[in-house]
Image 1 (cartoon, rainbow, N blue to C red):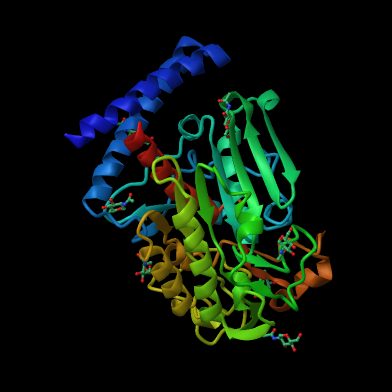
Image 2: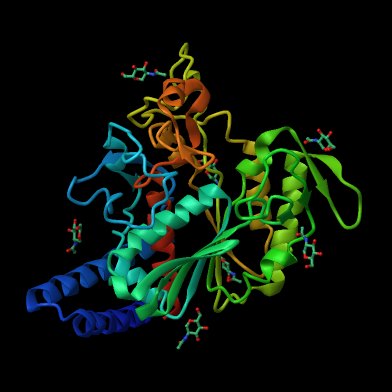
Length: 403
Ligand SMILES: *[C@@H]1O[C@H](CO)[C@@H](O)[C@H](O)[C@H]1NC(C)=O
Ligand SMILES: *[C@@H]1O[C@H](CO)[C@@H](O)[C@H](O)[C@H]1NC(C)=O
Ligand SMILES: *[C@@H]1O[C@H](CO)[C@@H](O)[C@H](O)[C@H]1NC(C)=O
Ligand SMILES: *[C@@H]1O[C@H](CO)[C@@H](O)[C@H](O)[C@H]1NC(C)=O
Ligand SMILES: *[C@@H]1O[C@H](CO)[C@@H](O)[C@H](O)[C@H]1NC(C)=O
Ligand SMILES: *[C@@H]1O[C@H](CO)[C@@H](O)[C@H](O)[C@H]1NC(C)=O
Ligand SMILES: *[C@@H]1O[C@H](CO)[C@@H](O)[C@H](O)[C@H]1NC(C)=O
């Protein structure tokens, strides 16, 4: 019953989308036919997805399977003009490319195929914003690359408005934005480029300087983890109290309380939607998956095939985030539980094929992978595309439900 009610709006927007397709780009009859088939297929896929969710499919329980080489990677370094040098591993010298070929397959259901025009349609006159640190910036870059190819050059752009980076699809009056806030709450690391890792101080009860930029945003996607994890203690303040050292999970809990208070008091559950992305795992110690070895993620070319959870992924911190989210009453924040699926992907990191302080690693640095490999950030195309495929499924699912 409910299914029919919620399907109708999607059908209507499909027809509408088809019309825009035709008029805007004057597609040939065959191409329009293909577009119609795609939309109809997508409508089916989203319907199946909705049913699966209702039947309790856990999207985050699954495995990585090699995809058809015609459908993945979903974009390339060449086809996406917006990728930063930090993530373009192939261009930076990475010799293997299998890491771009894996698709996430939940055990109990299928993720719908990512269709950029469907997403842009559901974001018409809307803003989608990713808030967090550099991991979240990569997810933003991935999302921009996933959608940009269907927008003609003349009607898209990326601009910087620190601490934001904004992609605009003018035809759709839609924006996909990134907002730098590595702790979500205020800190002395909030400058978009001039921030020091050392001497960080977090304002556990201060969020207004950021949150006024989040007001009215239709879809908000939050993430914050790795900046907390430098040491077991972190310097922080609350109110006008002086700076003192807090145990990290305690500080994280207080910060997320500040955040949930803002969410609960500000978001309109009818028109706005919020997500929280669980922690992104690191692969700093190869002995964790290959006992006896002394390396890190460097030279890894395949996912881990057995159960795996690395020591860098703090269960305590996960629990703090899960509790903060499940404790909310007025607003449902969707927890994108990507930690486990990303744990398997020791092959997905930028390693030595990245930049450091704005420069590509030198030959000498590359020779010292144990010292210089980055096993925190991810190559694109790559693992963050999957996080976005899951986010995509939820956004279309909500769009369909809301009509
Ligand atoms: C939709 O597309 C997928 C992948 O392209 C294909 O496997 C599936 O059979 C299609 N489904 C329908 C109902 O056409
Ligand atoms: C364009 O989108 C913004 C929100 O991103 C909205 O406030 C504005 O009303 C939209 N413009 C039109 C003409 O619909
Ligand atoms: C927040 O904004 C206020 C007023 O502009 C400013 O005094 C304060 O220093 C800011 N806090 C942080 C942490 O930047
Ligand atoms: C906190 O700040 C003090 C004073 O700058 C410093 O000595 C201490 O090492 C800092 N603690 C941490 C955990 O960074
Ligand atoms: C990585 O692989 C290359 C080529 O096979 C090899 O020369 C190098 O020693 C390996 N590096 C590490 C850190 O294992
Ligand atoms: C939150 O989700 C639960 C379970 O799906 C639902 O019962 C509840 O009505 C939702 N609350 C709001 C405020 O949307
Ligand atoms: C997230 O995934 C982890 C690992 O599979 C699991 O232990 C945890 O319960 C999940 N959290 C939620 C809120 O589903």
